[in-house]
Amino acid sequence: MQNIDFVMLGNRLAATRRYRGIRQYELAQQTGVHPVTLSRLEHGNLQGVTVAVLARLAMALDVSVDELLGWQPTAAVMPQPKHTRQAKRQRTRTAAPVA
Image (cartoon, rainbow, N blue to C red; front, side, top):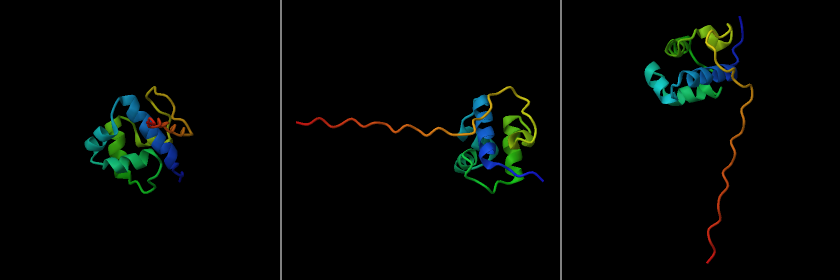
């Protein structure tokens, strides 16, 4: 039995969703998955995902569950997900004018 890398699963899920031009909220509505659950799954923060949820997501994205899990090469031509996430840059604040 193969282990599941949940971070890579999330990266593949997010990359496939973006490649298909679907927003997180739209995919959540199509599959009946709560948007917060989908977000946590895409960020690798949800370890207890069921096969039924994976199957609904895979069907909505027109890929196999094996492709999402990385057990089979992807059929669609899409960019490979990055292994590391870049930290978001903190916005700089402008100082209030001094009178």
